[in-house]
Length: 580
Image (cartoon, rainbow, N blue to C red; front, side):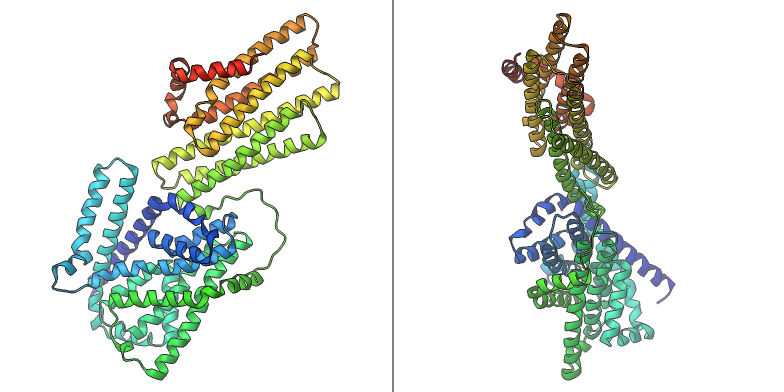
């Protein structure tokens, strides 16, 4: 083996790791939007949690990504520690799928059908299909699929390059001595732990072990302890991810570490005893690629069978290690760990935006109620809700900007932009709630009151604003563009109401029925109610199909107002309902 073989080996390793990273990243992006709903069903039981962890990891080909995602969910309060324990155990089994895929490279048979299963036979075709899709496809999903195929082709090419370059290692005595040293199980576990901790991927380290096994110098006696150590090394990613998280997220990472360490300790002891007492002959045989995949699966399944009944004990154990302490209450937390799976992070943003929307709507309604029933408690509630919406906007806005810099699809990009626009409108609606409250306080402090006619008119427009707020909020919470169409006719009616009320106020002022100071308050109230209605219209606009082309939105809305029979019917209905 010369310097060129070493360079080829390093090049193959680089292609392998790059291909695995690309494939995993676009698998997450392709499947990520469906992950959150499945993970939300974990309350159905422990077995379902285990199967979900297994399934998600098998799909995205990374137990590290699944575990980091779980820690993000726990940190955000979306998942309990008990649920996390079951998912993490399932993830350990799901990650073994990668080794089985890589083991196809070791297929050797004269049968045409069997040879077609060998990656060297179908990888070039997958790569060609991938590049065609990347070049000619226009749909985002097809482009993501093309990157998955290209990532897999690159991964398998790197695997074959590594295996070919490593074949010369079998003639080097030092290499032979190295794997003889790994016959000591403790050294094998240490080597597997170190390798996986460095590259932060048990799937990649298994692939490297399989490539080295192609030399024929890696025995089962050396490979099995290394596989055990790889399970400990993969915990590094989760432990690093938990830094700065809340106590439950740290506990989830500790469950991952405890599970893998305990499983390795028990089965390593069993392996050591069996080796010392029975001296199984197969331990001296050269490990095949499929044999390593089988050992990897068997070890992880045995660990799960051993510790799954004790998941409650693991939860209690880590709770004692990381005890409860007083923590500053956080209104809402958007965990940056979820950014590794952008569709899941976007789903979390939707949930938080829904909380913000409901808080803002409540602030506005409480503000309007203060006009007829002011109290200190109501005033405090309105201001607290407005402060919450300010906090929501700051946290959500910063998080959505970070999310937008990640590799996300076109549909998710549009959704993120929609949320950014909507949260700004909801924040302003809460501000108008406070403004209305302040008008109520001014009237109370100065002993002012409106005429009976003015009070009746104010009741009409407040009812209309309450309805448009409910329509916009409902459409936003359901992400329903059709429901949003009902907002625009009512917004036009509220505009007319506002102008009619201004005109009637001037008439009352001229007749001496209203004071100048009360008139100023009246004008402020109409302004705030009218602007609230306009913000509801903005929110509805974001939800309509036409909102995808922002520059055409206002033109499309004008056409909808003037040329739509549905608009005219709704407009007339609202005009009759809220006639002064």
